[in-house]
Image 1 (cartoon, rainbow, N blue to C red):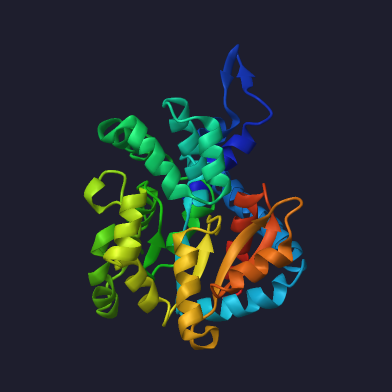
Image 2: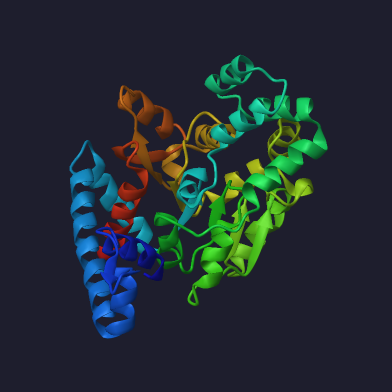
Amino acid sequence: MEFLRSQFEEELNAEGDITIANQAFLPSNILQEMAPEAYDLTFNEWIQSRKTQLIEKADEILEQFDNKLRFEQLALAYRGGAMIPFIGAGMSRASGFPLWTSFLFQLCEESHVTTDTLEELIEEGKYEEAAQELYNDLGEALFNENIQVAFDRTRESVGPINYLSQLFQRSSVLTTNFDCLLERIYENDTNAGFDRVISGKSLNEVLRQITGGSRLLIKLHGDCRQVAERVLLKAEYDAAYTDEKSVENFFSRVIFGNALLFLGCSLSSDRTITTMKNIVSEIGSDALPRHYAFLGLRDGEDRIVRKKHLSEANIFPIWYEAGDDDEAIEALFLKLMDDE
């Protein structure tokens, strides 16, 4: 739980410096230097207290709607070792990386594409068309440079993303993120680590390696530093999902044997959801594992309509209040670990 230390010290120092002989000192530094054993004891007690509070929060979340019984089914799949996490941009946001929609609007400010044009495309769920519009306006060099500047950065990993290497020590991981946060988190965990990172258009070899026991980080849409392996623009999506069908073929096979847990994903009507819906429609929901998601419920959102939409892709959500994402997901993670 070393990733929580900075938060512990921030709370310890919240009441301000301690002044000794007109010199200001941080309480955390005094405690650590003068009484290291007491510091460690206080840190461990803080972790346990925090865990208790968050598990209580998880219990409150699970009492809402139909969350409790669904979480029990999710926990069974998790304990059975047949679950793969699917990580979206929401899990990197606390570490300072932008959500994809926010990034597109940042690019828009530095282009001749109008805000109205971008808003219209986003509202229709046409994210790849929006990226293509900005690419066409900015040009290849400038667009690619902006992608790398935004996502190829060393950032401290903050929030529930830090639990993934503990929760899924033996599992491969799927992500649509362009940043390298997951690589660093797993590399820093001596009990985890990936055998290989595979991006975008190399998916045809993934299933063979997973079957052989390899633990993979599978970056479905590529990496911010590898343009050739990227699936981002309209033309790149068409190639991966329609022409070459590498992503579609991957999905059609990987979801036969594994439940997916979607984390930090908006799960709107993008190509991933559309592809999964097509597979479920073709094969039948009862012939496939059920997938799950920790999903924020926005004010005014029709939960039943949203749930029906997701069920068409065999995805079943555990709802929490939107805006409380990091704490809610951390609480549910601790509950999942506590139930093992």
